[in-house]
Image (cartoon, rainbow, N blue to C red; front, side, top):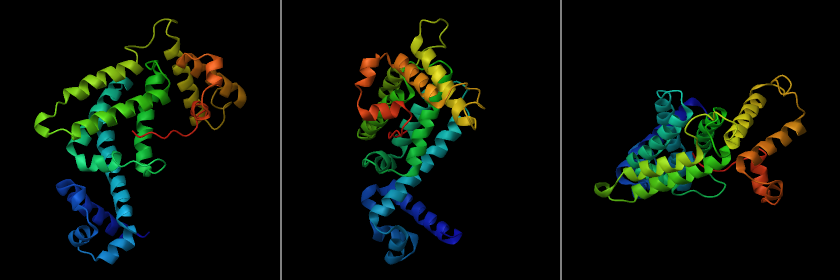
Length: 269
């Protein structure tokens, strides 16, 4: 796609975003979008194929907007991974309450296996924040489990708040749930003794993950283990963090094992 066509497509998305913000999804007829953008209906269909294509692109546009705001705000916070989790939660809820129609399009119409690349980036940002907490010894459950818990809680509370009348909306609901959920997956401070095996195991696992992903090879990254040995060590660390016995781990569903081994994760951030 050349620059001229990309700019024209972007302009149409900006027009559609304005209609969505002002009138909700009901205002997003293809005729209304084409008229507001000053193009013909056939031209709109050549850009997006159909209305579903337009809505998918608009959802991606919303995720880009959300990520830009979130990354900018997080860059201003102290270098504290747990503080970033609290701030990230508030930014997520704040975006949803301020842009309810966009949020409903982004999170309220999710279909299994179908989401824009920007949604993967939002998920990756949450995983990154939790990974930093694990490296600092501040996480009490594995990153994947913490990701699922925080994603489910932030999405649920945001949708609940959007569904309330603005005059009756109580944002302390989000704050109370935030404090409870984040406290359930993090520790107050780095462990000072060997009694907190979970956070120490997670910190070592996170350090291994960082070394293996930043270095060209395990040996160059300072990990004197073969790939099979590293995989086994990480499996043991995950079991320590999870509190599972080898028998329980072997009985876990196949999908869970794939996730523990670093397979793809499909939750939203």
